[in-house]
Image 1 (cartoon, one colour):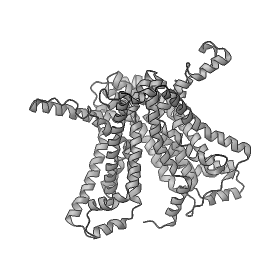
Image 2 (cartoon, rainbow, N blue to C red):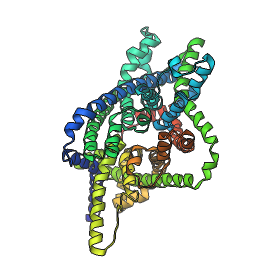
Image 3 (cartoon, rainbow, N blue to C red):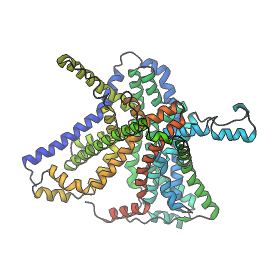
Image 4 (tube, rainbow, N blue to C red):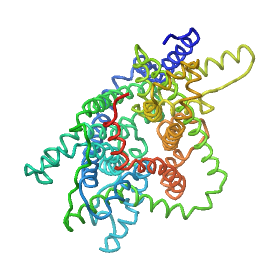
Length: 561
């Protein structure tokens, strides 16, 4: 079908807009590279000799521990709820997701309160056995690398659980049944058939968990673990060396790209997980009473550790400070968090629609690569992103202030950074991938025949989007906005580094109160973040195993459009 000149111009507009958005997303990375290679002073040798080796070693050990913890926990629980029958399985199927509602920094300060020397656990031990000081007994130190691994593993394992459970569900029942016919035991079926088929999904889940691990700054600060993220923060703020922080950020980016490669490699092989064109749900094992009880305990343990214990502690501490809920300071903090998150969520959805629609109109040439680059922000740690955003925005603010002062005698100050624009920019870049994934999936379910019919009736691409696609995509757009909103509410590293002066959000209030060990003061904002974080968990829980299998069966039964 021939396009009119007007239609061609509108189509070209979407492509130019998508490439421009990708350039804005990549701008922070370019700024980091520039400042790292041209620092104000020669600090690279000092970083190589003092900070970098220890920070890299600690970061790698932390990632190794978190990878093992999340991998074992996520795979084991996914196998039990997918392939075994035991009491409470249906409830645990979605309950295993709830630790995702609690950010790592909140769980970290909760366990510091519970397991520290003055906490209830060690106090009970001293009372029971008559110990007087910490020298009289041994207790694992929570403020350590092991404590950070414990906390992050308890919170981040659902990433592995989600991807692995999906892989187990789509594995052909015929493949598993044939293995049973050949005499494979449940253990043999798991290790020799299901686990090898699920390896790409496991790799994806672990890589996502490690990206979150690399982004964390709250938990490692509370535990005194000097990772690369902590070193970037410390070098920038405490040592006043932006060039040194940028050089450390480059080391972090190398790890990020390695994780991205791992995730892409796993996703490339994921197409081989399913064994046949026809899907039939696998037959579950009926566990005997003892094994059923053991399976129940194994599935309950990560929920108790990652959600119930910190949740009960927060509820208890928050109940002692309920009067703060109506204080001006707390209400202002809530408003700051909600307003920034709402603006960022709206922008991410609008940008996601622009990117996905531009790719729908023309998936050839540089556009496809530009859209893929635009969604890379989720993998960039918040501290790295903050440095990359600070440099260009501060340069623009200083340039504008100098010009306005010279031309009109007006002092504009830090117009973008001081107004929170830089923070919204960071949120949009970091969480654009979350929204884009939802929107792209929604567009994929709309038949191209609708576009062709609209063009036949004289609608250009803009009219087709507003009159056809957006009404159909309303539920998807709401979901994308919701997920982006909650992620922005919980974001800590970029918020700490880019917030305007005297500007507090729920996340920064928790971080600063916990840093002063004012745990009761941090409990109420922490509980608010957790309650908001439950929203996407409920959304994920709605994607039950049965609905997943139904969608998969429909996709496999129907012809590709």
